[in-house]
Image (cartoon, rainbow, N blue to C red; front, side, top):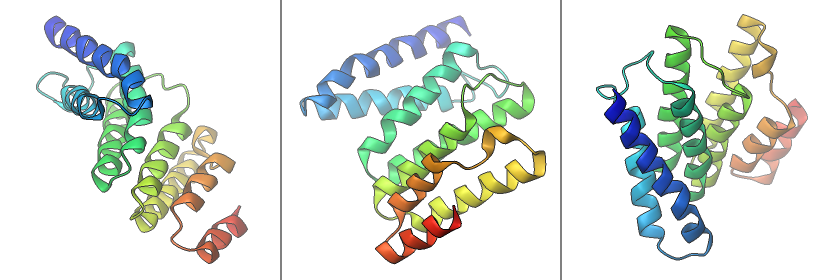
Length: 168
């Protein structure tokens, strides 16, 4: 387990180091490859069985979720969902400290919004978040202006965005 954790830290360090490259529009291929590798490592249940993530790995998953929306693709949105599901599965087995669970859902919404093909899926995620909030009375999952803004960003037309705004 120690070697897999060490592998994750090395890969994650590469991703974060190459963030500067991404921001300067150079070496995008290297950044994406490192992002994919770091994500694959943390989603690999042979390396990290459900219930085994530590604080560092949980924080790394959240950082990966923040990086993926900028890839602006359906694959990126799906990857964010896989990362979110991993955190949810982990939390069911062993409660984990996530600073802001609502933000994790918002990142999934942003991923679909930036893919430009995901309003329906973003709507499903938003509705699921609301259902869990109501079922568990978990105020950490109550929608806020950020989650509604992310959903409006995914809207295919201004009138659909206005409908979302009216729901707030």
